[in-house]
Length: 493
Image 1 (tube, helix red, strand yellow):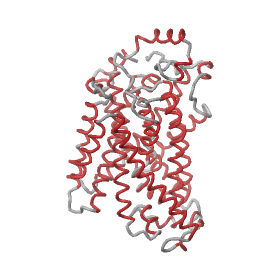
Image 2 (cartoon, rainbow, N blue to C red; image 1 turned 120 degrees about the horizontal axis):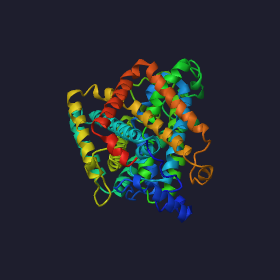
Image 3 (spheres, rainbow, N blue to C red; image 1 turned 90 degrees about the vertical axis):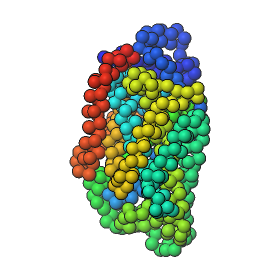
Image 4 (cartoon, rainbow, N blue to C red; image 1 turned 45 degrees about the horizontal axis):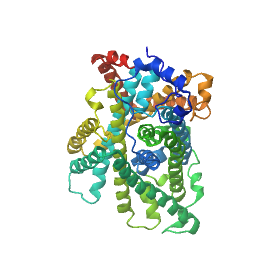
């Protein structure tokens, strides 16, 4: 059984909570927990500023899920997809607030994998960390394939695997440089795609307000209820869209990982947790609202991006080329941040003996060289798959990440609930960044994620993702015991 973990009032030196805690009590707690502290240091290098954290989280969440994946959600739910995005946004907010409370108290490499290890036990930390790495690798494979498909627009005769290989070299090099340089690159990537979303929203507003575009007469707010009502496919259609929307929000949990590398985590993490979910929600909801108002939802076929339809309505003939450049940037951004997140989590796990010890090594800049190179090596599978199955690979790979995404969210929420149960009333009052609406907000988010798993059981189109996810859980659990991790992790539990 794992021993009680340090309370949030005893974080590493340098946080506001540490400064406000009495020296005597802090010393007592540290002494009591010393035998359970990993030998390897867990304090990461500090190289990311507030704007980096904000844009890394935005970059991970705003990608192909918005630019292309939103078409499937609209087809399933019709105009009621707006409610789906709002409800899913609330779930993401409570999950991030839970992660934020723990991250402010203890900003460490490994983030939520380490928190689940502390509060739920070694197996939970092991599974959560590897499930997150699995999620990020699957998403990276999907985005690598997406880039190869997008490049056909300009180079139709070039094999897909060539572009996958080139992209791997670019993002691999970016992740092997300093943390600060990585943050600057991700800042630039995200700035481009956020700018595209804002331009689309403003363009749609201009069509409605001033009658611009080639056919402004087709635009009307009545599209929200005129074509079969607000729930054209019933409540069942709305429920069907939840999995697609939750997957689109996947990646926001990287705030906890990147926050550990922040220069002032006690200030940076709360700002990011409070503002990033709102920004993401506004981008998604406003963008989808504009799409639904400018065109009947029935015209969203999925054969082209809804964003292309917006620019086409504006009469911008070069919309396809513009969007193609934006979605390539979006995919690069997502791969860049996902590789960063997976690398940091696995490195943190290696320091607590939940992953091979070699993966704990970092260079003088704090970059996990061995882990990053290992992940890039695994992603070369994408080169092979794109050479063998160029037409099917994107659909197959994209379906596999949903289970991992919501599983990681569930473990973050359960770890937070467990951490709160270890606190005294006085310690709860002393929390510097407590979650709002405790405990009902957390129970709502946990209940909704369990409901999402029920949807995957109910709808046959998600059975493959569900089967692969459960299979991965069984495989990694078997390896956990077969490799003796359960014995080694007891030393640091």
